[in-house]
Image (cartoon, rainbow, N blue to C red; front, side, top):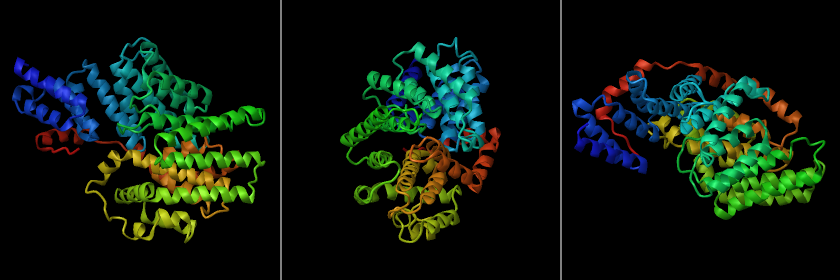
Length: 478
């Protein structure tokens, strides 16, 4: 590469790192228009990472596949291909092929020896991919189990990454989620505490499997802290001293209230606060809420629906329209959930409104699949809301306008299968009997069989590579 072109390439790389993706793409494509650079591995690999940031995973994977096949010793490109497949797996219900391709690419990047590798970034992200595999087996999750081998591999990689860079915020936070899924909540809280100290304001994705960049780490960190403390209230219940349980409830409430101080419009935190306080009161009353308790919870819930409807429920309705458009959820499925919830129920009034089911294609993006990829944070948020509402309905014994518990859980499952399953087997709002009954009913759910089949489908790499032929004509929007 001559001097002028090298300077131009470095400018494009600077723009890429600063998030100016459109300008970076234009420069890289200008360089590729010169025949001598059309197959330049450095240019194509870095261009591929930009398309990954823009969630054009097909084109990103096509570019990186081409580079890694022609330049097998380009370890950085192998690692970036692994990251593309990891993020693609997340938005595609953890498609098995993408998870396996991600693991293979990261493993190549670290030469297959995590204990001896010095490539901390690849190690941490390989650990994050194994974290997906921990709960990737739906049949195991239904039995309240995780994949122990994947857990050990995830910890091996993340431990090595932290050993190499003790201040690696992302790795500390990701390891916390591994411990959480294994229900080792004290270890998870410890890692989050370290993460909070070493990176108080950094925007990272440590607490979420979401590929969306720009999440506010302070708030997501507080959500994670709150839920972990809440989960701790259900461990060793028979032996746990009441004093320790009270401490865990106090921690959970403090973290949630701080999230609301930082952002009073945080509807997830508002709902979390209602659920945690309600469950604490229920346990204090030996499992039976008084009429005054229920009345107090109703007031908080009414306030939530009054404040939250214009924001979170509009997002949920829009999300469901896109899920219907790509065939992940059927209109009949939504109608059945609505019918079971009952006319006049909160679910029917705020989410499964008639025009959503009758005119579900209204206001849907021209490319609904890519809309879902780019708005995966909305998927997570809506799934969380439905899960929390189902928890609250269960705590209240379905004795309020919330109505029945199961429709909320079924809608959460339809929105995000893995998030719903993971939350179900961790929530303290259910007794073990209630948890088993719900898991057993879900085991017969046709939706899960559909997801299993979709996750096992194989893609055609040759078709993927054809994307390269149209690279010069592609227009990528931000």
